[in-house]
Image 1 (cartoon, rainbow, N blue to C red):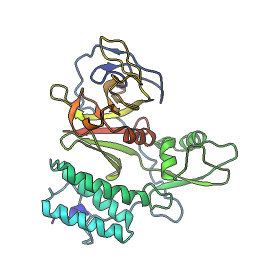
Image 2 (image 1 turned 180 degrees about the horizontal axis):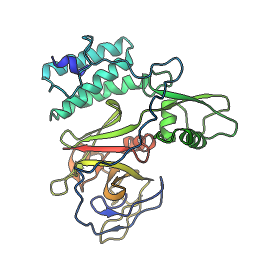
Image 3 (image 1 turned 90 degrees about the vertical axis):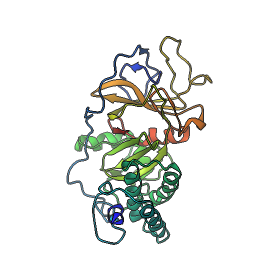
Length: 335
């Protein structure tokens, strides 16, 4: 029956002053106070405008692959998966990919991966296989301007920039959560400046969010219950465990300086700086915390329990996340 449901900146581990902009220099850290109970906290995240229609000629949502052909729409997390069921679901996803049914394949794989971690499983080799299949599916679906995902169409005006388009769009839809990097990737633009007057762009209307599973050591970039990108991560070491809870993305920084407590700040290009090339801070109830996503100067530490509580990512992957995850997006961390 399971097949029916499948288908810191700075000093990581010390308290930071909250930043107000999407990028900044570096933040000075103070000695941490006792950590708030993040588990019970509900960080707010802006939702997409209700009733928003998809772009003309596309569906309002991805086709439902919930039952692998049985017609069921049961939630993936309703029934724990048996290992055999997972194998059948993986086989079905591969078949859908070969048939060019990319949206359905993405749905099957999303349910498979989320059900796996929600059931307390942590087979990282299997998750890596499924993530590779998912990346192929989403290249043709979510990260394709011709994919069947909820969107609005806008026309580039003379003198426009993506920043201006985003600002104009949010003025008419204040509940939308969107960043320019998300527009670039969804439309397969060569860069944020690769637009021309008269061209049409599709802007996603679903709110992106992150789910982090500490046991499996994987993080998922989601639109609703659909995973658009999946990343293996490193998590807090024993004694500095990553705190479960619901956070929001705060300050985002390129080439961050590290400010360890009781020591002089460490420049980005210093070999002693462990933060890698990007920093995405986590806020809790509107206040900065010591936690966040960041890169690493030691790629072998990804998939290990070695950090001071932050989530470590490979530099290429945290750079990708930096571009597509808006400030204010929800980050849900589960044990």
